[in-house]
Length: 314
Image 1 (cartoon, rainbow, N blue to C red):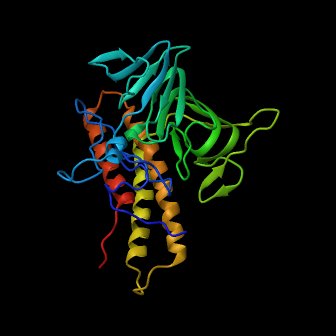
Image 2 (cartoon, rainbow, N blue to C red; image 1 turned 30 degrees about the horizontal axis):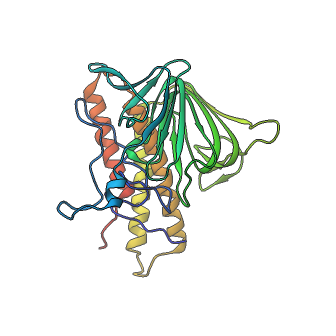
């Protein structure tokens, strides 16, 4: 299958606010985190200004809804502005949500009707960039089969240690600052970075459990170094851009090699995964050194543009 590489800002996959379709690696912007005091809501990318509106473009910008908010569930806009309780049927915030012990949040995507569940105590972001992507740094994440899957669409779950992507699966993930534990009950899911088992295109296919229950895959270790995660993101993003350039402007003037096409699709997906982890790590940095965080965010934005870019020929 030949994948189309698109310029930054064009809604292929979920890129920014649109649906995630066909390639499964469009993703929200990696550097979706806002600067201190700025809104985290993504800018509209669906159509040029003055082009009019449509039901599809309006739907693409709808936020996810909290169809269940039980216990102490609060939006967490920042230490200075405090927190606010999240009520049932309200829009999920663009930032983090704090869940107390025993709390539960079920978020529903208005485009696909996919449902994702977050359990406390912990912190999570649902529908990052208004796309099918979730982040957790503490607590648990659950998905079920038959809750809004669409052909070609994937949910991406990001923790400080790993990314799990799936189209339709019964999945349970527990996350702490030092460990991510993943259990797959039914369906198919893929893990990055891989820790064991069969590896395909840099991803590990997770094994669903039988009657004995799903075996857990554990990724542990100290919190990720922000500079190292951003460096890895930038390196993979640059490789994706280089392969896209080779694909669109092959040295022989032809239409590109099939191996380059496959490599570029793989590199683009790995860059997205690496940059998602880096964005989460940077977004959760303490507020003690804003200049360092701004530098890391600038590097993330550059890397995000690199793996999404559509190089010009010549």
